[in-house]
Length: 117
View 1 (cartoon, rainbow, N blue to C red):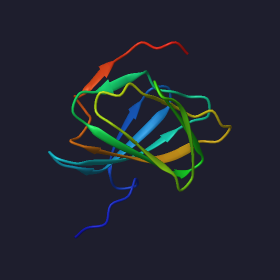
View 2 (cartoon, helix red, strand yellow; view 1 turned 135 degrees about the horizontal axis):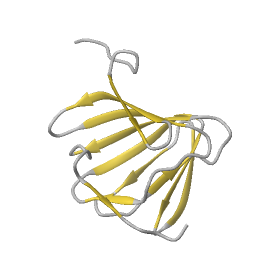
View 3 (cartoon, rainbow, N blue to C red; view 1 turned 135 degrees about the vertical axis):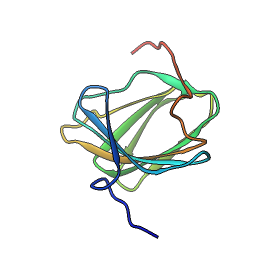
View 4 (cartoon, one colour; view 1 turned 180 degrees about the vertical axis):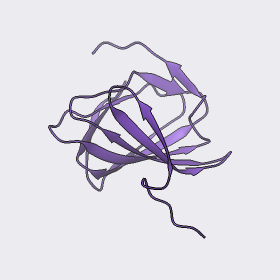
């Protein structure tokens, strides 16, 4: 076994100043640590096959879905089912750090959606 962290993992940039690190990347499971700056959001989308679990490590994260807005604080998480349109954003004044666990991996499984903001 070999320890991994965002300091040693494969990095990628996304959105407007957001960062992600692939902590685990296999054909059946992905574990990604992400950081989203204050006031930043992603585009509404869904995944055809991927089930995701968002878990906040530090800060506050909001997730919009047709069910409403779910606000998460450090130590809280929420599951997003395949096919559910969602959009995450950071409404706070500090960066948010969280894990996204996806099975199967969500990269290449993203379908953009339009929503009223």
